[in-house]
Image (cartoon, rainbow, N blue to C red):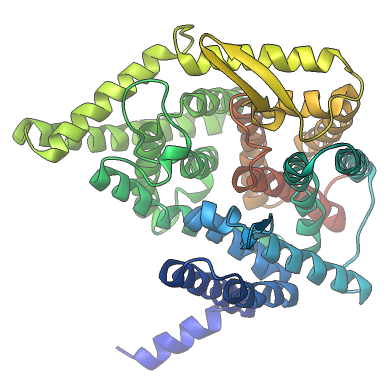
Length: 491
């Protein structure tokens, strides 16, 4: 075996972007190690983040690819670890540093004529939404106390700062190969993320699941964000199955698909189960032709068999060693999942009754100023049984309602027009490339899915989930931009 030839072949396939992604991930891994060994040392942490900024600035595409991987693998530490200097906390996260470097790098490319921004009707409405959100933030700074300003700033970041990705992606993803690279890095991250399922099974409880406590008995084997990332991968893989079913390593993907589904079930996130079911029905009815429907039925059968084998193996273990730790845990999982399924729609469920009371209070707050809303950083009183509290509007577990209440009908309509125009354009389009056509269906499915699940959790108000919403929309705009460049269809 010629090892020199193998090494040379690998080197030829590794691009400068791949090397930059590796360096960014390595730099952040060192930051994580420093944090674990020495605790939070502001000066040391600030120094350690410098490479994140400059590597992203020099290669913006590498910055986007690395933030996808780091968000999936490091979750809250990458997206929600604030810089603290004494008693002062600055809501600046490693994710923000990488993104800021990406934005500056893209701006530099535009200044030097290496990238050109095209303003269309879709972009105008999103820019208008950004302007409105910025006005709301400024008004919050003028009218609120320090704590509310911090909340308002976080809301602005999720609506505007991360939303700029919509404009950035078409400027750095210049061809089909670049888009494939984004998909590959995302799949690479979620495949590695399977380790969190294994950790959850071994520990009997998933990492970071304490942030989403259950309203019923049982424990989650996977955290809410990881289940969300896995659900995006599952939906994308199922919808585009006919494209990758001839892939040489498809057996690995089938195994990964079964494990992702197991993790999603183990996360006990009922709204995700509903959202995935609704979006798959949507795709089957509106996006698939007769050939695709036949192939998808076959694919569903394979997924069902793979998942059944996995579940049967676990159940078989409980029969062999019923008193073992694994046996008890499998039995507990089955009982908990059954309880979560039967609790869907139950008014006795505390999380459902809490949402009902909270949403009622949110509508009451909106009724005071329906056109302009309440603004950012506002809390509303909530009463549910013996529960009494003032809840931030951004945390009412319904992103679409939170947006409506905070920005009123005006902001809500502007964003709705933007989304409707963007989706209608991608709906009408047809691509010459089989990959781009498969990706078009996947993105439409993901938009449908996110539209459903946003009704049940604060996705748009949490950066580690909202970032994937803006990435999805940015990829749609990238496809539209590529079609314009290739003049494949008139939009």
